[in-house]
Amino acid sequence: MKKFIGAFIILSAIVTSSVGFIAIKPIIPGSYQLDLYRGLIKGKSVAIVANQTSMVGKTHLVDTLVSLGINVKLIFAPEHGFRHLADAGESISNGLDPKTGIPILSLYGKQNKPTPENMKGIDVVIFDIQDVGTRFYTYISTLHYVMESCAENKVKCIVLDRPNPNGFYFDGNVSDTSHRSFVSIDPIPVVHGLTVGEFASMVNGEGWLKGGIKCDLTVIKCLDYFHTAYYQVPVKPSPNLPNQTSIYLYPSLCFFEGTVVSCGRGTQFPFQAFGNPNLPDRGFSFTPESVPGAKNPVLLGKKCFGTDLRNAQEEQLVPVPKINLDWVISAYKDYPEKEKFFTKYFDVLAAGPTLREQIIKGMSSEEIRATWKEDLDKYGKMREKYLLYK
Image 1 (tube, rainbow, N blue to C red):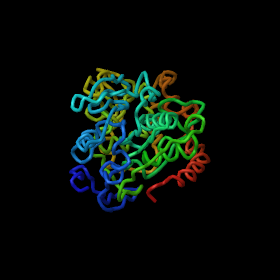
Image 2 (spheres, rainbow, N blue to C red; image 1 turned 60 degrees about the horizontal axis):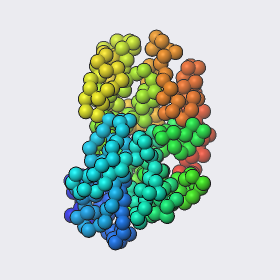
Image 3 (cartoon, one colour; image 1 turned 135 degrees about the vertical axis):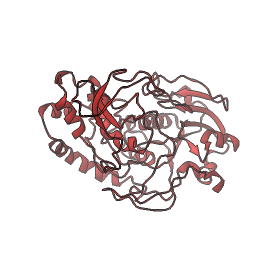
Image 4 (cartoon, rainbow, N blue to C red; image 1 turned 180 degrees about the vertical axis):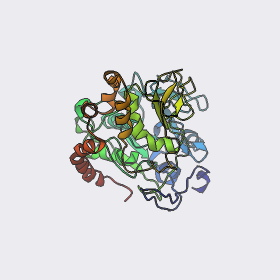
């Protein structure tokens, strides 16, 4: 196994923060542990759900398995594509992987779920994607639909687990399934505090697949991972989460995607700042430009005034075990045309109109958080049943 453990294994470290991260051994993701799943796929027809994060050391999982003689028949690509990153929301095309010649089928855009025809002749589907632990990060929605298709078509599903960099807490409103969407597919909080393997187990165990059907699921666990372990993501999981600071800030700043405020897309520091031309000038500004990963960002070419969060870790604003609502609340208070502040997408992100209505009503972050408590307590008890890393 050691030859597959390349430079991308990330050591845990002691971090001085309110989270109190602990130091443990090097964390080994599920994909590296070939001995645990090679026998499950040898001689089988395999489909793989993967992207640029699906690495085994310095080699992509698909290339690794092909080199071992595994019959990889199909690649399913999530949002942002397979090997190369596309913009958020950009349509992903079907095609052939130029390196292996294996067909690639997009599960983002026109089609979110594998069809019976896609699954024809497939024995096993492997899911191996780095998540960042929020319900509106669409990789877990893709996993939900893949599991559902596997259950319907009697195909085994193997999740190669990876650490969750935001796995040390759970927070936010638990989504109302009457407002289900691709960024809010299951009744979980904004920050779910699960690895993808634990999430898959919860989906299966709670009967959240259509009709309550169960998927034949195997999770290949990470080694030496705990939810209080520090894990630095070795490959950026999407174009606008380029570093650890952006990953920690994402659960709080993503709400700006449903407003007229830019969260830094089109800059060198996406999800590490927020601003708008109509917010007060307090000494910080940025101008979104067309860049790879953000070809047409919000407020393109307009000078935005706002808040710089690039030093959020040094200032100990993150990592902390809760969402920061004060940023979106303060921006709403500062914005002169309040009736134009929210877009329709805000309610999609928030899984309903409640959060928007609370902010408009003038509720403080503490008052809003109090309305989450009962549902979060119930979720916390449910979550305990599915934790693989206690």
